[in-house]
Image 1 (tube, rainbow, N blue to C red):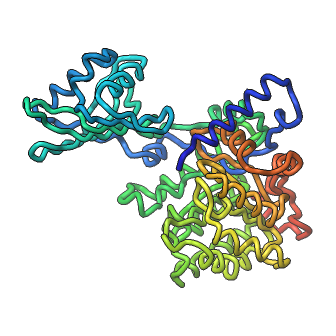
Image 2: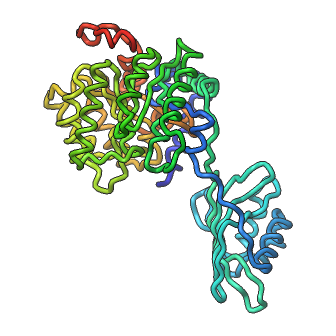
Image 3: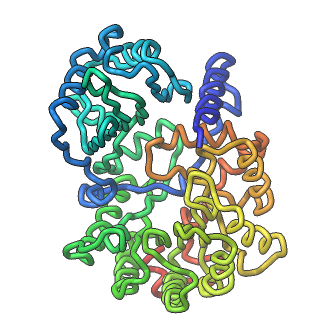
Length: 453
């Protein structure tokens, strides 16, 4: 979807604040970020695919790429590298530039420094072909590109169409507490919950992970170590794939350590199928254990299943929530996957809340990345759903950037059609797990709870 409206709104809002001086609206910032992650160096290896390897290309295509690099800012020379009817997409105004002269004029002034195109796939078939690759400088790949190629009557290959993507590719690196605190400071946010990504090591998406359980434990412990460096600002949630045979043991281990205030579950990454009774049975057992240990749960329900929606939420409401009546359950991304959310899934919870369903008494929702890249109609529906579930149940979150907390809040603040008072309510909401009372919502603390809260 087109992100331009959200970005433009954010820029206009920032400009207005700068020109009119501080106002309550401009100064408004969330008290806490309820959806953040840290990444160890080991987890970062799983967080983004490494760049594809460069491939050899036929000499005539290699010559085309060499000429492109040599004449990167020479508008006249670039013309001969494109067909007469060539077309290039521009992210500057989300439009197409057509014709060799205009294409060369645009590309010849688009880049601030020299670059090359590193090919990772090429195929030629008669007089046509394609090439995929990276825009590359000595320090990194900074963009991706796909080109359609055509051979002219003079035997030279030229570019007929080009679709660039900036920035790219995404390569994850370690993201630690120092970096998170810096980004929180930039957003004016005091506190955050850091959700471990240990479940990545047990994900079916990452097959043949050596020493899987050891790496799950190490990632959980590393997250706790990082949060402990800023004890007045950060709290840690452990994580695990709850379908694994070791899941309950890791939950118990983390609870007994006293270093974690809750649990992060990612149904999609763990490939939990709420339509499979055996999966539901495992999840019920896990929810019972978390409830016994008084560990709140942040649950990413979206799974990537094309049918994901109301049916999945009903199973969650009817079978899982009753197993955790004494703890906060926070549904991530407003019951979607971000950007945006899944309205049919959210609607089940919203209707239950409106009816006073007691199973929803400790139910909360974070809005991490929900407002990103959404058209006006979706944002209007989003605002209506926020009011339906109740403003006090809505928690700000920004997720693992980029964009980071400051931009995420600005996007939410300037695109979701809520009043200043409504925004202020959401900004000041802080989940009960930050206070960590030994008596949870009037329930007596148990021996196992004292080790974790």
